[in-house]
Length: 235
Image (cartoon, rainbow, N blue to C red; front, top):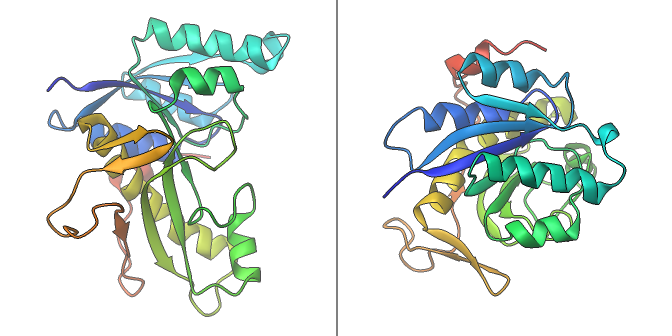
């Protein structure tokens, strides 16, 4: 099976983008990162991608008269990259419905909460305010409604006594860096696809009864070393 050509859209530091690039550096990974597009010229992730030999492009909103025109420029760039999959990784713009419909089933996003809970922003503070004991992140197919697409995979982490929004965010981010490559691999291999508005997932040996979710629970008592490539990220 040929590797699926994947373009990542970012707006900032690109830590999830970096995790995807690291996973795709393995020739056996079913997707290859062929380009990175940002709506902000000063996004730190652009430098990280360039340092790894990946083509980048800035498509600023200010250079286009409307959301539709901006999305059309992104679509043209995706076509130039011969993109097969689009991965949103901290891309902080709401995409137009026409763009989303064109890429539906081929565009995925990662969200820092266990959807359908806590759509939108400030997810970690809201989880703490609600008194949750479990929090996490979700990778989903993108649809026209924000943070509402069919779920591909989720990772759960504990909410610890004494957590604040920053400590909880850091724990969730580690889970994101493991979850997003897993989910992209599933989509690239055809083991996760969108049909009739629902996510259809292959069955797994460790989840033979339902095969409808992938859940990871990192051990909160074991401090894991950060990925080497993430250690080199500068603000």
